[in-house]
Image (cartoon, rainbow, N blue to C red; front, side, top):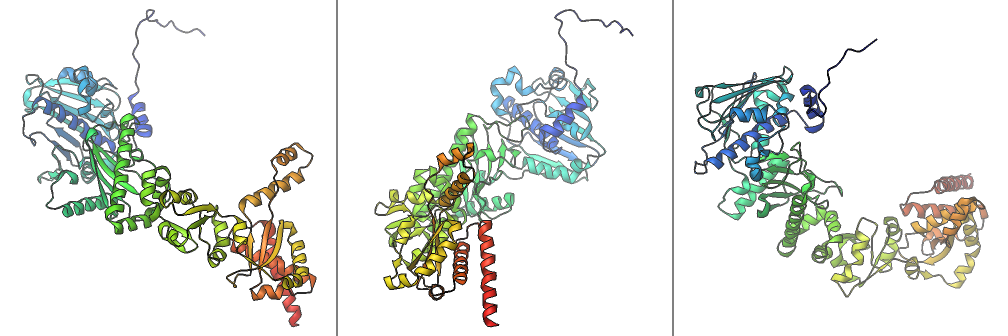
Length: 615
């Protein structure tokens, strides 16, 4: 089989890419845009850019001279503007060439900051919902030019023709879409009106919507942004901003923080959430660029620690990504993020200085967010550390209150350690703070920076045991046999047993056993099991002297006094196992399988003994 001769292009000849428009539209719908609904945003955005250019030509025109009119009756969707319009040459340059944008033309390259769009693919988004796009335009920059019509179809074909001036008496552009049969979800009149309000409620140009029923066009953006309005009193302004935040986000803000960054033309509000949120859970923020909604999920506008607020802002100088649904990460965005973070810090400082009730409600809901900020921000640390709540042996308390009664503050390294010692430490008059929660231990150690008269130290088991009173020698000798049996029974857990007296008397035993000690004992056991192998040598090199756990029995407890007098060996061992199991459960740490088995066995053995005794 031979192939036919194929004519070859001359060496070095230029070629043109062949674009499959349907494939490109599929790419847009699945990978660039989040939803077909963006078609209306793109049309409105093009109209706003055209109005901006028209305003450049006629700066003395009245503020409401130029606007945008939307129309949808179920069969077509139409967007008409009084913008700068297009000539026939503009149509061939900007509409017939995929990827080129009038905003990138040299004649306005230096003016790009005045336009929302930065990419020339916006009109293609209309093919997500339409079979045909019809554009009728007349140029305001070249008034003598005729009207021009461009008609593009989903198969990639298009036509261009000029029309008499009467076809469009006034400058501007009208874009008409003929929707797909299955695009009704996005092109029904009610939905078009909803989308127009969603995207364009803060636009600075008048926008109206007509549903084809013959009534007057409904305003899409009847009022300016709430922060741009004037109010009779500061209280009225505050209430209006809070009401707007509730309308946008669906919750009544604990407070609203006005945001104003003149350098980038940013204005808006931050709404403080009235309830706590999980640490690190970042909320999306509503970001408008020149009035057009860009994104409802712009996490990047604020730092990670600011998860206690949701923002709605309108900016002039932020740069959208290609999809115009998020912000481009550049130096401007980084500077805006830092400046907004400073505004939030300033709000916290004002609340601390002048509104203690608001501060208390804020910290009650968002203390974890403030703790995360205080770890890295010395100013916030100095202002708010005394006010932050912590779990202590005096209950939940601020460090300021706690330091008034405890000049020496002890802090645990874990929650389970605190729960083991809290009752005994409280009865002994020790001031202990639970340092097991995120940020707490680090923050408590910085308390002397704010309260120099207070000292802070990690809780050492020896510190607590030093506050447990020894029993007299006669009692110790009487209990020696029981203690020996108890130590033998608990040797499998590397646990020593001691007899002391401490309050509260209702606590029969205290298990002193840190997480680090358990890990070291586990490592030592693995080293013994792997002795002689490579892993045994490695674990042996890491091995330290493994600290033993200690079960401290309380001689003041009636149950313990009864147990140490048991003279039956098996029953004594069983009671010691039961006391160990009860102390381990009270520590609320995860139980090892052997400990769970011990608790079940000791309970059944004690039950069996009681039944035999009664029979």
